[in-house]
Image 1 (cartoon, one colour):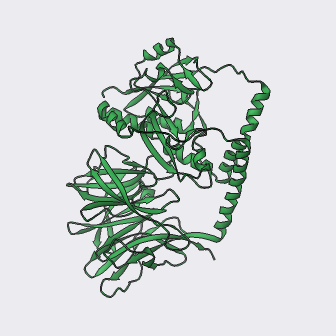
Image 2 (tube, helix red, strand yellow):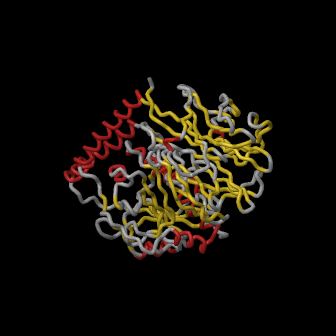
Image 3 (spheres, rainbow, N blue to C red):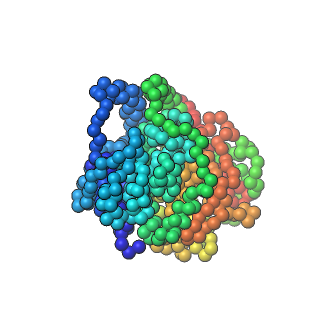
Length: 552
């Protein structure tokens, strides 16, 4: 497109949630879209008596208290529902006031307002306010009315958004960006994303879901602008099945006693977690086995335990002559950053060297992705704290490394994993596109023709995966029996809960597709709560595990 995408915003008032304000701010600063019309819903005359209004407030009071007390207990920052003014973003935008007609839960626009809106030649209308929309307003913009539904529309339709996933103990909470239709939450899906449902805190779940979904609308607009209408509709069609039924009921606000019970349960859960934290802590260690087989029992792997004041994680192994070299993240429990250390195993005698520190920086290092290319050894450690992706080269393998080139700057990236395929270097990493987003639920890919390039092109379909169960890398991409596998983390139950083995079906500059084929669960020893990195070289496999251990 040559002209920016023209947007209209449906609003109930000038006040909008903080997460929406941040999303629209990104659009305002963009080169692909602009807001030129604010459409306000005129307030309806209040028909309820004072007694009924107070009764309604009383009925919802336990739910309100649940949310507010939970937010205090878990000290959740950056409230996505804090109030911001849309006028501060778009003081020059035109605005109109609409008095809708319709039923108890629906809004239908009068014909004269439809014609007024049509005169602005809008490409997209985005819904922040109003109720369920009916009639011609759904078709007045070129690409329709777009709206978020926080909650997987296959699991939860209704309200409150993201709340019933917490109540029903769903391990993930979905979000969809859809083109609205006459049928509630059954429009064409543009994007879908899955974030972790916090098992104990409803406010944390809500925050993760709302902040995590913030970039979906700007991303869809950007894709439409740069790739065109035909490609955009191909994306939409790919995300929508021809057979798609919803078999659950319509969720509503919880009843008084339900909310009261959940409030008490939440308080009990909080103090139970606090008490456990007094006596237990999580600790990562390394495991290894001398084998070339990709089957067997994980309980038979050898455990390599760190000292009590340290933890070890993210093992990568590489062979050179007579030794296995295992690089890993090492962190002292009283420090806020980690460094990269090394243990060497003789391939013949199976004897170990001492632990040696090989790379330390002023910022946190982890996930030491070590590999060999054209006779040289390289490492790409995680350097998210420095907002970079850095390539190091060994000057004296395996102990001495120097920074060769910074591949990407100003990026919140974790677990960067390089893979050479089809005459290109592909860089897979978990990315959060805003500092307000806490979790890494999205997989991004970049590519370049040279390993040491400073110009890495983002994949056209980024994020290629937006699901906390599969996105984050968990080790080197490898080939087995003619198939290519990408290990990834399942972060749904907790961070680094399990390891997936996903078979890559398609990898081009325009498309990416993978399917999960197997999984490692943290079940082979008592008190295990996670395993999140797997790697191998000829004759050896390594992985890590996390256990709850006593503080005393």
